[in-house]
Image (cartoon, rainbow, N blue to C red):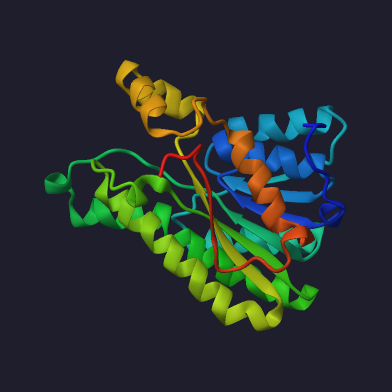
Length: 255
């Protein structure tokens, strides 16, 4: 990571990350730790999350505070945000990373399944912001980074409940930016392309996927979690102090 930017404003800044135990989220947690930030994160996967925190500490970096949490329980999410603020100091950056892009057939979606997709992919972003904003206001400002997806922009099929939720994230970002800009709180959406997490590779990167990747992207190379983490760092740092209500696409030129 040493070849990339260092952001002095992130040192000792309290950051809260959802879904920080694996994939893109784990890379985000690690990158903030390298910057010297005070990181708290939640994830339902306890073993992987604890291992990540220990690995970061063993590297001589500030050990993240991990709190086990099922984001479908917004009360527990709010309690975790309060705990991080009390333990590490007021949250100045919120990264709403957690999501689940399981495929599903539209004609088989039940109301219960629909509600669960929203409860994972949209509702926590709103309620995490609701819980963190008072801490940001008390600290004089902050940055909210919501995670979008190119899936709905590219007109992808096969998971309509997911793409609907991700499209809604963009509306949420713009409303938060408008409502809380006067309090010096910024809100932006990072829009990842097809990022080669372990999960994506295991589930969907077959021969057809490899071909599609090289056909659709302008850059003929794979994208990995650090590519997203570096954009998140920029948007959480003071370097982006006049960026708000925007989409930042990191997709190798897919769309």
